[in-house]
Amino acid sequence: MAFKTENKTFVCSVCGTASEHTIITETDPPQGVPDIDLRPDEPHRRYMNYWVMKCPECGYCNATLDVPSDVERGYLSSEEYTGFGGITGVGEKAGEMIKKALVCVKNHSYQEAVQSYLYAAWMLDDEELDEQAKACRKAAVAILDGHPAAFKNNPNFRLLMADLLRRSGDFDRVVREFEGTAFTSQLMTAIAFFEVNLASKGDSAAHRADEVPGVTAK
Ligand SMILES: [Zn+2]
Image (cartoon, rainbow, N blue to C red; front, side, top):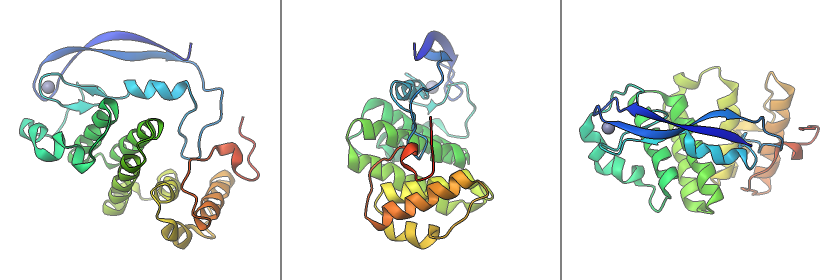
């Protein structure tokens, strides 16, 4: 068992329609090594499919449908929303995750928006939709750049920025902004050093945490 699920009814906070969804009730701790952006190993990665719900009536997407939102119902039929913010050719779940990111931006939940784009990118990585995964990472970078106050003093997002930039091919910026950067955590400093090293070699691939020199991840 990597995880257990059950079905539950949720009432959509935008349109009031009730619908049934599968949620995770229990998970095993991951056994394998995560990637350096903390993408979990298989089979734990598969529970990402349960990290987003879509209302069958109005198309509202969020972690659960009862999460209140500032979005107007009209926005949910807008070209931006139905067209996944311009990221075309994505699978169903990745598309819902991108829509959740768009909702989070409307709600000014910028940290959750970045996380949602990252999760969508992980799903697209597994589907080998590289261009779309790259577009999700660029969208996450744009949120980090556009709303610095929301991420101020949060080293986790600062470090994630290095990975998002590298995985979307902006190697120069990784080197420029992270070369010689020290974090309060030694592990994070080691990961940042590793990111700069990969970027300077033009490496945009996923790497596991146990590849970081000096790190012995279990
Ligand atoms: Zn709805």
